[in-house]
Image (cartoon, rainbow, N blue to C red; front, side):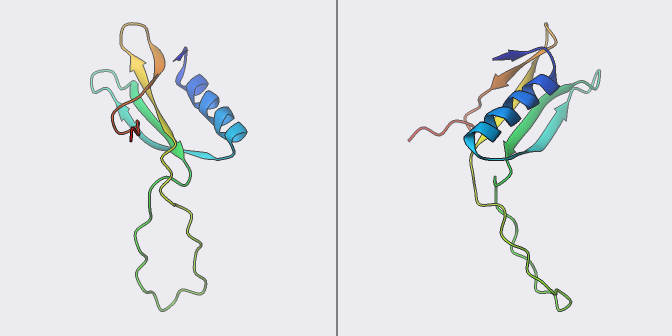
Length: 98
């Protein structure tokens, strides 16, 4: 899919996630050095990845619930250089072929 702006791509994925039953968060951004435009934007499920095991703290009153459980739902929005549009880009890390 192709989007005129980065915001349109993020909105598309947020709507898709809502319909599919999960929430999203922005994971990472990469910018081009020569003009500062965002070239890659990673949008992931809010349960993507794992948190580091918390260190024992004596002043901890309440344990926080585990929120990240290794979900693989994600998209990468990539800038098309000659058109200033964004596309959904799949890399080998994004695809899960058994």
